[in-house]
Each structure stands twice: as C-alpha cells, then as structure tokens.
Length: 159
Image (cartoon, rainbow, N blue to C red):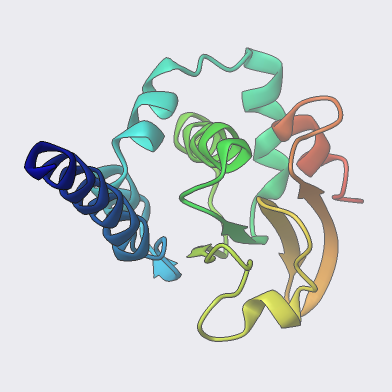
C-alpha cells in the first residue's frame, strides 16, 4: 500500500511539474526590435539569414525600393517569419538599397503589437511586410511571396 501511495505521489508531482512548465512558458517577443537584436536573441533567424542565397535578379529587384519604407510585423514563434524576415534582411544587405526606413516589430501569439501597429496595418497573418512611400501603402507581402520576396516587393513600385 505504501509503494502504491508513493507511485501515485510521483505521478502526481510529475504531472504538476509539466503543468507548471506549460504555464511558465513566456510570451514571445512583441514590439520594435533591430535586426542585430533579432539575430542575437533568436539564433534560428541568424541561421536562416546565413543559409539564404538569393539570385542576382532578386538582389537587383530590391534596388527598386530605394527611398521607400518597410514595416515588418512578424512572430518570433512563426515558421513563415523565420524564413521570410531573414531573407528580407539579407536581400537588403546584399543590394545596398537605401531605404527611407525599416522597422521590425514582433507580435505575440494573438498577433498583437504593443503600439497597436497590428490594428493600423490590419494584421491577419505573420509575417506581413508592408511597403510604404510616405504615408501611402504601396503593397504588402503576407506570409510568403508569390514569385520571390524581392520581385514581389519591387512589383509594388510604379515609376
């Protein structure tokens, strides 16, 4: 009887620990973050950046974004974000394009951003990469590009 009690006690305490670990799971990063902070805090983003080898056509296409702004809403927990955000950052680095601004914003599991950018940009899916000229939205890539990230973004620019 004593061993049965001990077995039940062990099972109960293991179950409680598992429950406590689930409750202790922290929320993902939400808010503005720099590319260097993203890479330092989330190694999977750094690894994806290093592995990505864009085509010369895609690198050239990104140069059309000169003078524009990009707002990137993404989840550090999201596999599409882990793929597309590092690709975007690598394309920008390799192309040498001079953007007006680039802002990266993490969202939580509910796709909320602390300064309410999720509402401003009507965020539905992660990542959402919004190309802006001043206050005007030129277009957005949601979750994944149709052709390629560089070509899709360049396609929003009309000259």
